[in-house]
Image (cartoon, rainbow, N blue to C red):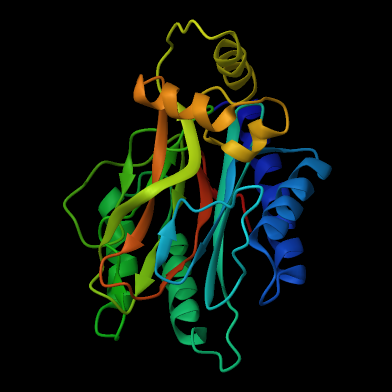
Length: 293
């Protein structure tokens, strides 16, 4: 891992950490999710970063991939997962935390356990650590409690302009003995009182360029060019485009049908039980460094 790469990962992580502190300071029960999203994404820009993906604001049994549309009237309540990413020159910081927005601290315990499980995993990371040791640490802390690790959500490696760069970091005991060196990873355990699985629900407002393709429609070509230039292979959302283009909903639908774009489904806990999330990014080179703390 070259010095410039390390420097950019760290810069992205610092902005992500400052944005998390900012979000913790203003997010309140009954705020519109669109207001929260725009403030968080605006803060990332203000601090000199770019959004690595649209901020995910997932409520209660929704685990991931929910970002509000421009006219979304959904309000913050229950347990809210805030998952945000920052990119500097292609290098990404990915971090997430959960907020208990109830009046009786209903979700305090699950959030604290989730953060402890993440911290336990982070405490053992060093150059050459085996992938399965991370999941072992998380699972050992959660095992025996009334909570379950969501088994079909995992951490992942990060690449240049890639949120999921190919390596899966499972949050439970597994047989992956690959050793981690010269790599950036995101560790993100999800906990629930449910059965520990998510399913793909309706399609979200989040898209990603999947493969190049030629289209006849002039406006669609402009949108593809804009996506390629500004987001490359990183996720983006409909509302980002709606400020610049017309017919966005129709065009995104058509490009998805043609396989040019991928539309991420909203992920929901199978038994409809609430979900918590905690996440940090780690770069492993001569040492292991958590960039988002």
